[in-house]
Length: 155
Ligand code: DQA
Image: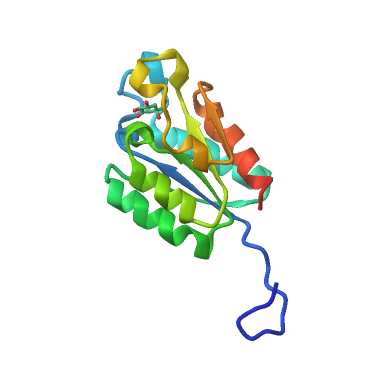
């Protein structure tokens, strides 16, 4: 790969963007019997600590807004080599997120804390699964850590 100047080899982007969707800011107090007792910040610390261990860079963002998530996914290809996304409830509803992921040009790993296939019928359908390289669901915080390792394999 060449730089814009066309001479020096460009380093491959070794950075992963981790996106948390709506209501995940409430982790810790939100239905802990389903989502566990860790807060979002505690989950993020575990993600950062694994990233250090496997020597990749991560940036972590959370939004309750579909459009903001779409904007971040659209811009991700410029700065990141892969994405890990827990789209929360937008997983089951958002064609906009699916289209953004399909157009992102970088691989995305879909993760969920709970096992979406063991829950209500409306959660069993993921609109983003078909545009993700894979899905990890039901392992609590480990879903994110497994997702990060999987995404790192695509850098
Ligand atoms: C979730 C599962 C979704 O169905 C739910 O709306 C969430 C969290 C999970 O991580 O288990 O907000 O994505």
